[in-house]
Every structure is written in C-alpha cells, then in structure tokens.
Length: 273
Image (cartoon, rainbow, N blue to C red; front, side, top):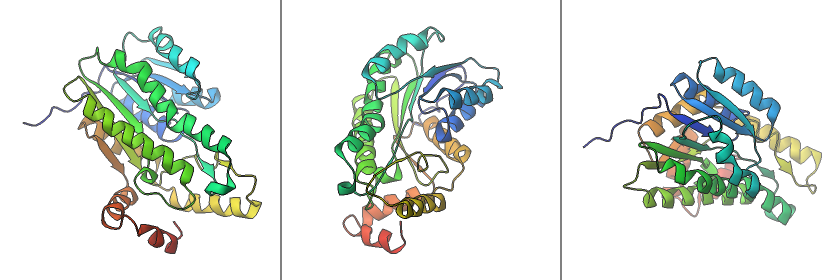
C-alpha cells in the first residue's frame, strides 16, 4: 500500500541555519506550501532578510537568534518557539560550518567547533523537539548531511566525520521511530551554491594562495541554486524518504562509494575533487 504524501499546509516548521543558502531557500519554499515558520540562525541580520522574503506568503513567521552549539540556548529554544506557535510539526536541522585544511594542519579546537555545530547541534535540537513532535499526528525531522557524508575526500576529515555522524544518527533514529507519527530524512546535498566555503574557518598553517585555491575550487563545485536544492529536499520529505540525494554529483558519489569503496579517492584526486 502506498504511503500518503506529507501535506505541508498548515504545519509549522523550525529551520536552523535559516539566514542564508539552503536554509533560506527552504523557508521560502515551505512558506509557499502553506507552512508557518520559526526561523533560527546565529546571524540576526541575515535572518531578518529571510523572514521578510518568507513573510510575503502571509503565513506566521517568527525569528530567533540561536547558536546550536549552545546546550543552554537549545534546551530553552522550544519554549521560546511555543510563545509564537501553538505546535511544531517539522524540524529542519540545517545549520552547518566547514573547516579548511588537512587533519594535521588543523587543531583540536577546530574539530570541536565544527562538530559542536554540525553534529551535536543536530542531536541537541532533535532531543529538544522530538517529545513535542511525537504528540503531532504527522511530523518529520530533516537533518542536513552532505555528499561528504557518503564519500570522504582528502582534506575533508572534519567535515566528513561530522556529516557521516549526522547520516548515521538519522538512519538509526529513522529505524527507532518506525511506527510513530515522526519520520526522519537525512539530506545529502552535492555542490550547492551557498556561503559555507567562504565562511569556513581556515587553518593558520595554510598560505593565502592555498586558501584562495580552495575557495576557487569550491566556487567551481558549488553550483546548484539553493532554490532547486530546496525543491528536491521538500519533494523527498513529502514522500517520506529516509535519504534524499540532492544533485547528480550526490548520486554519483553514492554509486562511487558502493562500487569503489576503497579506491574512489584516487579518482577524486585525478579530477581535483
């Protein structure tokens, strides 16, 4: 028997990392589908811009300055959201950062900073909102992993470790919640044109030339418009898919890992990926 599509109309969605990129595009796309929104980001200026774009739909929009790396702020966040919205149905854990540099070029502090946002932020937000979601008749959690949560190229030790963790957490939680009203999706975007590379934390051991080269490579690879990525993500959520691959590069990465699990690194190096 076919599973009914998830109906976004009238639902309320919490989105982290809503100030730019995929988060902003998700906010706009959800608003056009009839969702009310609680938008969270560490950058209040960017958040206000997203809210203005989403509010044009006429649905309820609240904005919340939030650092998902803070245990205390995340623990208090559901009560803050409930002051603006009567219930929460959808949770999009989308906030994320990157670190530039190979493993020994970076510090333990770099690793901790990235993991606190990319992985622990997802876990904290899920722990904070899941009890509420379980009271709703049709709820969903959407965790942004990455193509680099499927394959792990050289130079991505920090980022890949965090995104593999997000994918594993999401898969296990999906299995735990089978039979409840809450679904779980892990989203694995390929190259989407966001500011994640330009806002990355780069190792002090890297030269200006190396950083410039890395940023140029990122600009070459991060090409899919966030709006198109958001449409693919919401189509997958609507169909309650546990894993959503965004872009041809994400699908290619999936098959590379399946067919060449121990040797795809040399292929990526050949094409400077």
